[in-house]
Amino acid sequence: MSKERISFEGKNYSHRCQLLFPLAKIVFFAVVLSSIFPNADAFDPLDPFGNITIKWDVMSWTPDGYLAVVAMHNFQMYRHIMSPGWTLGWNWPKKEVIWSIVGAETTEQGDCSKFKGNVPYCCKKDPVLVDLLPGVPYNQQFSNCCKGGVLASWGEDPSESVSSFQISVGLAGTSNKTVKLPKNFTLLGPGPGYTCGPAKIVPSTVFLSPDHRRKTQAMMTWNVTCTYSQFLASKYPKCCVSYSTFYNDTITSCPSCACGCSHKHNCIMGDDEKLKKKGINTPRKDNEPLLQCTHHMCPIRVHWHVKLNYKDYWRVKIAITNFNYRLNHTQWTLVLQHPNLNNVTQVFSFNYKPLAPYQSINDTGMFYGMKFYNDLLMEAGPSGNVQSEVLMQKDKNTFTLKSGWGFPRRVYFNGDECKLPPPDSYPILPNSAEKGPFKFSSTAICTILIIFVTW
Image (cartoon, rainbow, N blue to C red; front, side, top):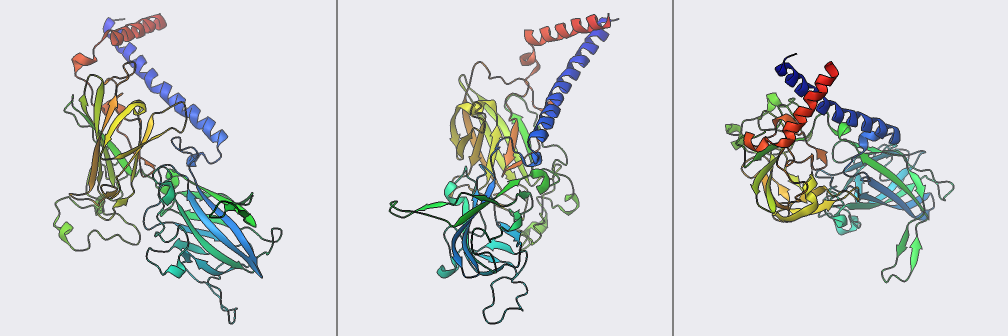
């Protein structure tokens, strides 16, 4: 057997091992995950406890039902609900009706023809509710309402991550023993992706008086938990990632058709005269995007550029570009996973918050815009981008620019995971920098193994 063949087979064997071991880990993790979590498709490893909890507090009983305060809490660290806002629905178990609502409204009244005189606000068996818009009359408002259904993420602004309304329900139970819980909850935020579990009775909520000297409690409380799945929300990713470095002229662009190419025939070039038409940026009712024609056909691209390498620090530039002419993004969030995010020295022009879903590992961080400065990512065009730079201190035991270490492991935009380029396309160091005794010794060991196996 020739030396060239031995060397080739050794490299081939080593390459095969490198491919199979990560694959085996992924398969093993998927099997374990599916056995532990029945709804594993809604499990987010970077936000394992993230959910939207809808809490019903029965404040008082009425002659034919109850008066309840419904509060929607977004406990997701980096996934918010943007305009046109949330839509909440459920099914009544009996013949319940809604006499009145403050702080929200149903999209339909339904058939109330059997009522004479006092007509209910909504008679539908499956009511659908939306939040009120800002600026409604004061007598229609309720605490934490009237934001157009927009909910901030818990990690970005906890005070703006709740929405609530008051509802008066009739033809229902009038005690803890006779009331029946609503069922088949649905939540759009604003599109699909959320799955809601059944309502569960929990200990009654306790309220403090303004002076904190007296406690009162709800007559009855039940919770509904909704979790998000990117697979249910969209068949394809909604964003992609590209890379570049100071030490290599190669730019690793987003993969072709990274977000699917279903809109390829309806896209528009960046210099098209149609962009000058009035109303080109007006969103459609069906939320159909108008994308700029690109090879990746993604609405959002995140670019990571390794900019500078100092003695004790290194600097990265991050740019987010919007390619959708019909949609801007308010309160956007960007989540990155990289081992050196455990030692961030300074972030320029973005807000930054470290995320530690697993206390022993601090490799994940959330970036979001500064209020009234760049928290709004405009639609595609000259202003459709935001950018920042991150300065990180090196850990001499782990830092390297070899083998793609300088690039993020995961990237999320607005809570959806972005498509990364394949690892073999990452910008590499010049050949002289890649060579070293470790690489030579690895090849030599693998060659010896191949000789041993073939003998």
